[in-house]
Length: 289
Image: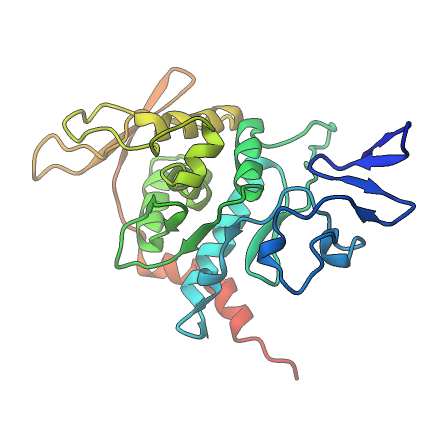
């Protein structure tokens, strides 16, 4: 599916030109330094039947899979939900390769009418992250808040995101609106990697609004709202959870089609948490007869 140059019979793969007569590229893979065991001129890890080599692989989730030398149930739970959400948000399929990097098959899924699904803007942004020469490393440390920063560090606090999901569901709004995928996209924009994908000429990382302006959205919320809008999801009205008094519950407003829904911050019950992690526990406890 790549464009052939009739003058030379070379194939244009975007970043590199391929000569089918020689069976090789003329320039090195820009990710060659990540894979010292492979030729810098290889394509698709020398397995073009199973792999394509379009978007790179710069979202590393290995720390979600293994923590302290062991498989992490909670990290796998975060990974499962994040990948599922990103697939729904972008309309693409994602998997994790042997190096613990998130990769896409490059295809866009379609609905029953043949129309592409997902947010076009989110798809462009995620593919920009995956194709970046910088890495984003995703972790799960519930002693820290969900946050992003540095060149490419994103921590997902599963307790915090689960509580956000429970809050949205109690208000009758969908999980995808404020779940693992949207939270990852939001926090990734606070990193230098995400900032440069959004704005290649940026000089500072995308930041938060000041707490003294509680009704402000801030650029991250504004950007992620574009993804929500393209998916027909409610849009977040402001950055911070708000309180009318120190004893009042925290709330957040969401808008859709001119209608405002006020969401009260709640918590996910232990029973629901356990139920949601059931598939991960089943996989980890599976034994062949």
